[in-house]
Image 1 (tube, rainbow, N blue to C red):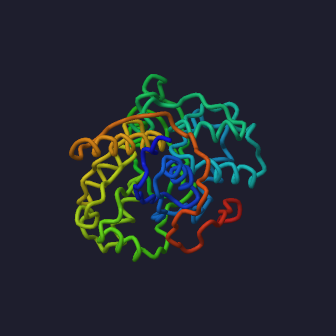
Image 2 (tube, helix red, strand yellow):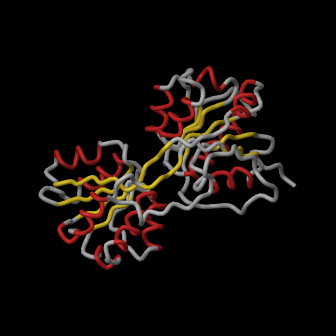
Length: 305
């Protein structure tokens, strides 16, 4: 039997606990050990009044843009809360930042009109440029603290843009002592970051010490250039980066990195693969660093002012 490509590797997964499974399962299916250290958690918005108000006048919008799969469930919950259904969105053009977001929308009965080639805000802008947005009303439900390149650019192009808070990303309370010990002992091969928030919150666990000092022998793997830039600003060196900004692309890059380092000295690898495939869970439990309130289902329908 052929040796699995990640056999003997130990890889830290820093995604939110509710989302970590797809990456962890892929790692384990390929023979690696996935160590879950969730450095972000998805929470309901503190105040849904702006989202509710936008949904109450949803017929006035031309475009609805989802910059993350995390914005879908809160919007659908609040739509129900104000007494409307997904039929109220039927007149809109819908844009999704990536295939995973588009798949989730399709599962909710919402047709998607635009998915960019590059799964990031800049990719959405490339695709929207061909659509002509001048004079169009655009609604963007997103995290409380998100990059503003998309709404700022759309406004410069003459669109009327409303950005509303649909959810928050927060740093969970975690016990990082075990990871610190394993990093210091050289027992971790890779630490993965799938967003800038995961990297920033990871660094905060180490009191602002430069990531390069924290990592020791461990390599840093990033899902895309925005995350990689954040890592570098935090004093880290990116060894692995997916060209297409997906979980499958990240896993493929990690596999190729190990294939290369087993033959030659470490180098940076930029690779790609399609988004969203999930492997079957491994037979044994994976290590999980405990966090406060892990695994709880968020209720987006109740909180409003």
